[in-house]
Length: 436
Image 1 (cartoon, rainbow, N blue to C red):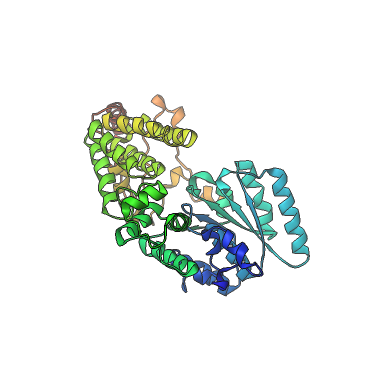
Image 2 (cartoon, one colour; image 1 turned 90 degrees about the vertical axis):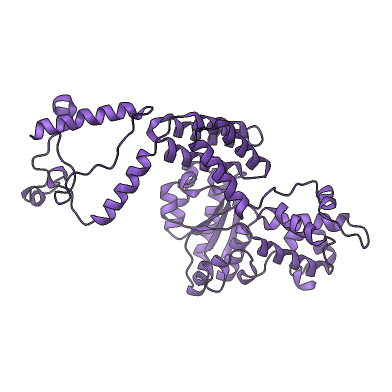
């Protein structure tokens, strides 16, 4: 057991620390559940071997090892380690960290700066990292549970590589339990079904599975073995009704999507509530509702997308369970909205055309001519400014000449797209008249 204790730490102090803390990996190779990053051929393993680390964003759910991996990276790369949390830090704290890193760099040592919950920094605070990243003062490793594309500045993302941390699967959580049993020198007092239930309760969170195991050991009397009901009584936590990585998860989200598409708000609400009751991440449901808005409602009701995004913001603001009502409102709105997949179909058709004709140049009359040479080549020649034309419509052709005109978007006569169809028919008539 001594190899599990922190260096120079008395055993009695080590045993007082939470199990999850005592079992933190000592090397990247010991990290479980993130083999695509820390395995023999993992991205981070290769970075360490090359001797070159760049700034990174660790994106993944809680309890997947983001903080631990950042610490191990600094140790294996010989970097100084600094850690701050965006929840508790402000501009003054950042300046102090940057000054320490600059002083350290002057003495020849670089700093790995780990920023937990980096998405909670505002845009200006995120921008403050850019100079120290660019001049090598720090190697930034930011951790976030939110989608970096939505929550982080484009400038910050352009200077950092996003690495995705996956939720622990059943095998990975079982491995953590075995390590815990080795550390404690005794098996978990659970029968087979209770052990499987405990793993489901952890919901992909490695820290949670170890905390739950610790609660079980504390509660068990000598030679007592808990079944699933006894486990639930002890930890006061319900196992998810379905495994989010297995068929139940996909079956319910499919049923929700089909009910919305089929304009059945009652069935949609039923499946939505089943997912809430099963412990599904409400923000995952919110993302799926946004997808339904753009795939199945589209421009038949342009407000659908705005309402789904507003529901996501409301959930962020209110939290659970109050915020779930906002998602329910969005779900009912989608189910009762007019349906159209015209934009979805048009997008797929246009993407096929783009791949098939990706080498064709746009017609020269719609290209800018910033140089005399380009003007001499005919760039911009003959372009008509639509706002100066009757009805603010020139009727010019904008497709590549070799491709000819194509029609991808065919709005149905439903909802708001009925009005869009009228506009398109009017413009097509003008185009025919003016080019005849």
